[in-house]
Amino acid sequence: MEKQAAYTDIIVSALASGLTNVVTYTIDDLGTDITSLPENDEKTNIHAVGHGQGGRSALMRDVIKTHHMKQVKTLVTKLKAIPEGRGTMFDNTTIIYMPETGSGHHGPDTEAPMVIMSGKNSKLDIAGRYIRLPFHGTEGHKTLSNWYTTLLNTYGNPIKHYGDLDLTMQRNRLSQEGAIDQLML
Image (cartoon, rainbow, N blue to C red; front, top):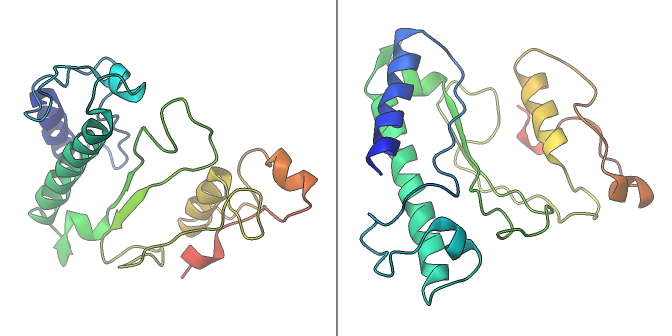
């Protein structure tokens, strides 16, 4: 867990110094030692938790996600403390948290929950909103390709569609190209 806190500090330092303005951060993987989490009294590992081994796997999944969100909160708090222009670094930042256990460990890839936090200068219409898009294969469903298309269009690269089209959507003759209109200003 100390490594994760150190990586958060490195990210803030890299952003604040201007070394980069984009960071991809994998908080943990199957090799991350979670035995130091106080709730992990069985001293199990992430892979075992994912397979439901041990009596407290569901609890441990929630504990891990809570720990992740604490790291994200630390990142937001530190960015809000750094002046930038007429506000803070967070005002010009978007953070996307995608839990590793989207729709279940080794589960289908039909759900991709994410938490998006963005400062007041965001070009996306997401402030204070909970957004639940329609389920896979139904009218209005969007893919990660739509999400990437939205980001590209919003921030100056107006393309029709990023990535491959979903075969299920094609078979059902459902539209899937373009940005996600609900997120556009």
